[in-house]
Image (cartoon, rainbow, N blue to C red):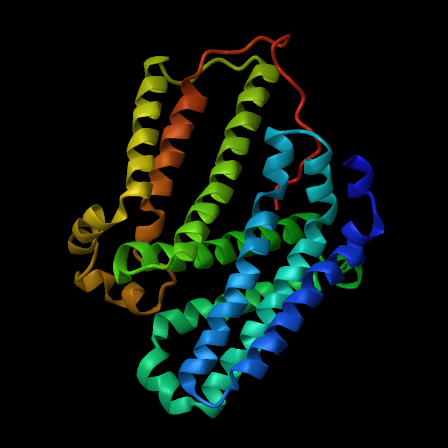
Length: 307
């Protein structure tokens, strides 16, 4: 298996073409079967391109965390090819961008009357700006014009924004619009799992750092149990979103002070992410209150740089 992971077809530009070429061919085949002569047809192509792209985003999002949590050949392969997996995602999203432009320019009435929502448009444009900038700065000619700190901030912010966009789409499909298809469930839980890997990797790194530094706990040990309970509540909210969503809407919407963010601020008021904030709080409490590990019990974290 390790030898297979070293093959040229599964690394670098070989991997890029192995993944992106079939996606492009499938887009062309779908267009041939369903010409772009109506708004609904173009919307269907937008949805298809997103479904091809999102798994690549989730993999790139979780790549470094896999190596932290499960050090090994597969994690190293993911880290080695994270750039090219990200470029595969960008290629798939380029198809979505093409179909969106087609919808806006050719089927303008359908777009304005049936699709357009101002805040959705702001989220989409912001996501494409992040994606374009991240794509360009993945290459050395642009990367060398940025400091390492600037590059890291751009790519970390961008991948979180793009992941948030995809995850929130499927959260709304499951818990607001109703009648989701089975693939909506798969993509929702895949998006949550990708975030969960990052959260678990963060907790592991913090725990090992405290062990290495022999830092004392800053919270009483009882807070570990409180953190575990909060995580359980967050997991329940992740699983059952419809009941608490209604209460969240009543509590978070409709105030004079929130009118502007409701119109313009992406993801406001962050309903899809409230359970994740809850889980993150529980993990923080556990990390800060956990019993100090000895140096001998600590293990070394592999060279995984978070995106």
